[in-house]
Length: 263
Ligand SMILES: Nc1ncnc2c1ncn2[C@@H]1O[C@H](COP(=O)(O)OP(=O)(O)OP(=O)(O)O)[C@@H](O)[C@H]1O
Ligand SMILES: [Mg+2]
Image 1 (cartoon, rainbow, N blue to C red):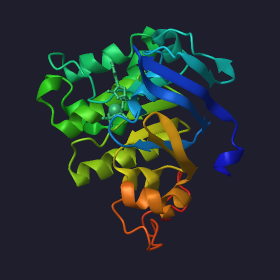
Image 2: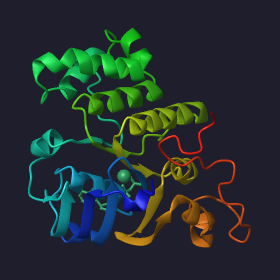
Image 3: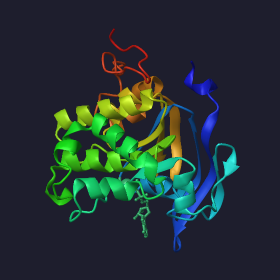
Image 4: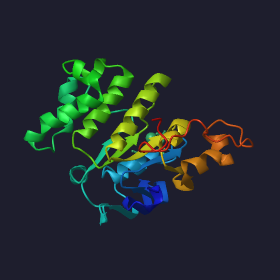
């Protein structure tokens, strides 16, 4: 199925956000289709986290519209947005270091009916077996990669239909980045749409179907990942590649939802 033909699950238009007098977003428009992986790229301070925080109801927009499943959610509280199926893994993971792994997962399930909790725990453990092994361990003693797994596992406890991921690869060794990205692919293969904020543009474009590039609060480029990967500006600024050589992400790009996966 063409990514572009899927109905938009998340539709942001004209989004403007300010912290005090300072504009952080200015007329941002983007969409995420049901079951799609979309990446949001941009330099430090360009407004990536602000975009995710506004979608999840943690920051109020000064203007514009956020539609989720056809409804304007821009005035909804964060809890109601979670209950509607949107889960946010914040930058820096935000786990409770003094709680056990299990208790962190249970905190994620606070909006979930009690009888569903064991099944959701099992699903999180199936995705991240290390969390089961370490369930009694204090979360603050986990490695960076394990803490990221815990943060994602916790976000999945509410069984979201749209997952907002803020720099899941931050500070992780390449092997762990690959592991986390493989898990994102698996989560997506089960039908969860993903809006992925990343500074690791190469890995993000390899995973996502489409992407947007933010610069000082505005979308300056958008397109399929393949198109963005050969855009000279993107290549120079975000991929560290020679803008004049059209090598793209050949051999790296594998699309989403198993498309092109090795049999
Ligand atoms: N709570 C806040 N109060 C005031 N200004 C803020 C706040 N949060 C973010 N900003 C400002 O808004 C702009 C966008 O910040 P944001 O965190 O969205 O960027 P980002 O793209 O996620 O950056 P990074 O890659 O460093 O995480 C920045 O100029 C930042 O300084
Ligand atoms: Mg950020």
